[in-house]
Structures are given as structure tokens and as C-alpha cells.
Image (cartoon, rainbow, N blue to C red; front, side):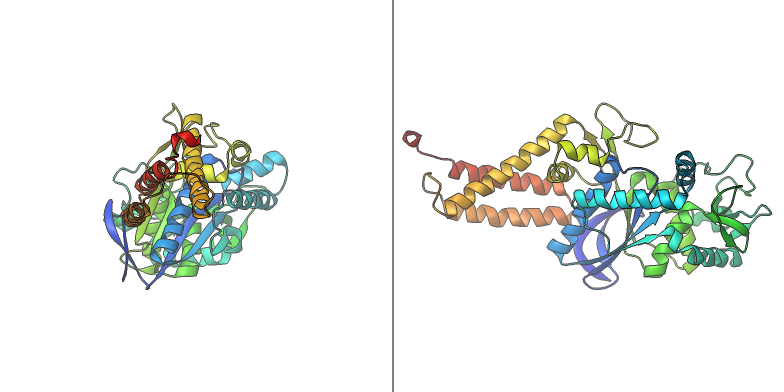
Length: 396
């Protein structure tokens, strides 16, 4: 492998490891995308902006070309439910919110992935993937037309990302699966529900198999980085790993799993989520704050840590950004000879700048520690201001 010069916390090993990529100067990256049944909220925004920051660090500071695929879940229980409520087809609903999501990401200045892939465009590939798992005995079909992954057949290999895993509750209680931990690869269609024809009858794919298939369709068995919110680690990412390693018959699929921490609404230990109805939509937020202010808010904490969202934390980010842009304005004015101030010790500032560059790159190389990098830059600004603003008293 190729050593990137970065050390990253890998949820797979639950430790920091050197980020070693399969190909020199390039990273293959799969990102779980949205389930498009509603507007994206600030919790989603926080995760996507944090990973966008990591992507930019990899590209700009470490010269790594990132090939990123994002899966869009455009068929799902929630989409079907919401479409029925609104009396439109699930596909029509999904297209509306997919477009909405892309607009929100553009407004947040999140770079688009190299390619978006929709679940509904990959149904034949998903069916073929499931057929392989059934043929190898890793999955079984039931008389009702459901197909499940047989977790017991996977044995000790299940539980890479978590040590505590409850039975999966995504199916009805009167389920036809053999064991509580088995999870659906294919779900038999209920009456009046959207379906595709498969060897097991009419139905649609389960959630976890979609990401495994889409990622494998593009990257095969070799994937460097997989990202998503910490709530996706189990069962979603755990199940993806089991499916892919069973399908590709490989020792390890997805070399690095990076998870972003939750966004908490100030004063509550609950994550922001649609189901808890405590969310702020991205559009509403951007009427009050700018995308750069939100990015600064994201930069101030480690991507993997939970972060408190409040008026105060946003004001802090706002002030930091303001201080940074004022300094740049003053520095440019000084360079053009438009700033009245005492003689500046440029040699000291040049030395500080060189040291700051080293500190920032070292912080980025240490699990993308943006908070340390921001602190170093603000320290440079503070010292720069002391020189640029040392205006002789009688001048004012």
C-alpha cells in the first residue's frame, strides 16, 4: 500500500492507524448518502460538511485524488409511507427530495461526489449480489419470498464495529427469519406496494444490501475508506461488511471506517433527527447564518466527536470567521501601504507563518484535527494583529 502521511481513527480496529491506500496518490471512498423522503437537516449537514473538510484536506494538503461514490437510497419503508401520505408515487417523492438534497449540499459548499448512484438504478445488480450470497449458503430465502443474511453462518466474524448488538428490529415481529440477528436482503412486497420481480418473487431490496452492491459495482472488492454518521455503524455498516466479505470472499472489505459524531441540540443529549422532531432544516438555517459560518462551527471540533449546536456556538464561529477576514483585510492593506501602523517586524511574522504551516499540517495528519489547526491559525492572527494594529496613539 501507499502511505498517505495521515494517521486516522479507524472504527474497524477502534484505534488510530496510518492511512495506507491501495493505490499511490488516490483514495477510493464510499459515502452513505441520504434516504430521500424529507428535507435534510442540520445533523446531516454537519456530517457531510465534516467529511467534505476531510476530503479537502486529503486533496489539498496531502495531494490525494479522491474518487468518491455516494449511494442515494431512493426506495425504502419511509419513502413508501411518506409517498402514500402525499398521494404520489415513491419514485416521484424520492426525485423531489434528491434534488432538494443536492441543492442543500451546494448551498453548504460541499463538493459533489465523483458519482451519485441511486438504488433504483441498480436493482439487477442487487438481485445478482443476493443470488451469490444464497448460492454460497450465507443467505436463505423463505416461503414468503423474503431473503435474509444468515448471521450465524458468519460466526465470529460478525461484530467488527460493535461488541454489543441487539436483535435487528427492522422486520415485523411475526417474522419468518431463523434468528433474531438475521437481516433482510430482499423484502417481499406488501399489497399495493412498489416492487421489482426477482427469483424470490415480487419485492424490493433491504437497506444494507444496497450500499454493499453499489460500492462493489464501482470499486469491486477493494475499498479504502467508508464514511457515515456514527448512528450508521451498527447495524448498517456492520451488515455491509458481512455482506461484502461473504460476497467477495475476502478477509477485509473497507479498510477504514470513519464515523462522524452527532450534532446535539444545546441542553439535550438527543441527536438531531427527523423522528425526534427536534431538527432545523438546512434551508431555514441558511437564512440566518452563512455556509462559511457553519463550516467554521464544524472545524472547531473533531469530526468524530459529538457537538453542541446553539446560538452561542454559532456566534463563536461567527466571531472567529470575522477575526480571520479582518486580519486578511488589514494584511492586504498593509502590503499595499494603505495601513497606518508602527513598523512591522516582518521577520518575526514570516517565522510565525512558517511554524503555523507546520503545526496545521501536523494537526491535519493527526486524524484530521481541525480544532488544533484552527487554534494555530487564530494564534497567528492574534500575533499579526498585535503588529498591524500597533497604531501610534497620537495618530488616532
